[in-house]
Length: 171
Image (cartoon, rainbow, N blue to C red; front, side, top):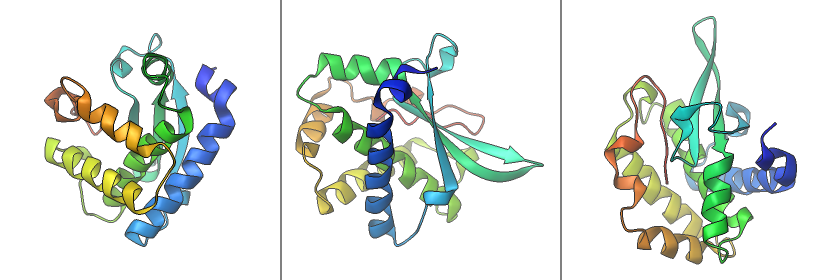
């Protein structure tokens, strides 16, 4: 079982609740019933290397049942260990808000899951920052500053998006 879910289940649940609130208030929509959360370890799946989260569609009989936010244990824990001034809860709220905005946009037809683009990532990143600024979360400024200081922000890296209906939302 993934370490993040085992050791920090409460932080994942609370960050999901906070992100639900932020996205719900900011978009006037309810995404709570549209997703679940899983944690993965990249040694089991190499396609998760170098991303914090991956959004997947769970389909049943050809219809979308819900979305799954797959948190990457190793990337998140490694990132936080390298940046001890960033707390787990605030970072998870940022990641979850970003992913929930994707889900909201896909479910309302504002974006196409199977044709997600680099521009969609930029838009969702900007919306994430805007909504988190409108609904202050302690420590969010540190997260924003750190992500802005990255030498090559992964958001603007074209390889952050893959084909085949899977978005590697590397924040």
